[in-house]
Image (cartoon, rainbow, N blue to C red; front, top):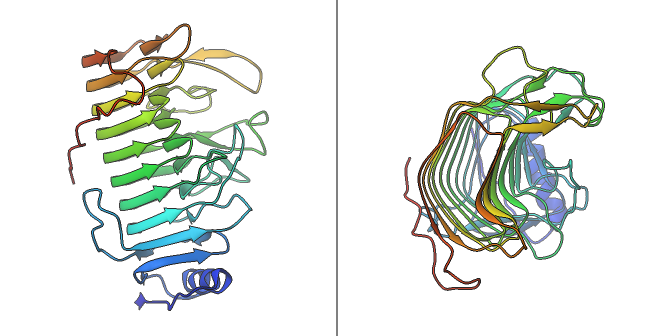
Length: 341
């Protein structure tokens, strides 16, 4: 079934029309008209839906013809995907200013798939496809832009353009618990993820992967960021999981970073300090590589390094070029990320 809501100038009405369709109609296609439409708060997206905007100039980094601009103050994502078999494409998203705090990485975003903390054992969210999506954040307070959190797998991100915010694409483990100090396990770790043709600019960070496995990031241009990307073990590494998959089969390749932050362009860490009991544990990476990356720029702090490695055994580094002669604000730019489908 195809739904074509008649959106207009009233943000409250727009949100009501869209949310009612998503919650009461049989799952199908939600096709949004060209234009820019305010919504009074974010939308909850259950499983089985395809959300598509106008295809005008939306591919290969071109601006989409349809934009949703959230005006909410609740911290809800513009689109919070809560079920499997969801597709989002050809759409521009503008989240409101948000400052969700250190452990609010799934809040205030343009798109969140899953959750960080769960009240009870969650069902896995699978087979989510997000492509030809633009995100623009206003200046000021920072939140992440796209978040993949907790019990999520088989996710594809392709041809994303992100401007502003804290982290462009944040991928983080999740758990049952009311806060990070009360987690007892199990924990849930995103896996079977593919990220291709990613462009992030004017953000604090391009992307990070925290306590994941079976992830491929290929073709990314991260411009004017304080940090390019991080590969992290998570606060509790793999202490609450029963399988040995976490930290395995991760491949990051063909990434260009133009950075200007105080510490590093890339950080690869194997140790994590639990916020439950302060215990430090180390994740052993396996079959993990960072390849063919170009790091351009210099640090602004007293001590900086293009690549910071912290107890990260098992991570292979190949063909990394560093150019620290490019000054901050230079017109030099990353080559365009290659488009792969």
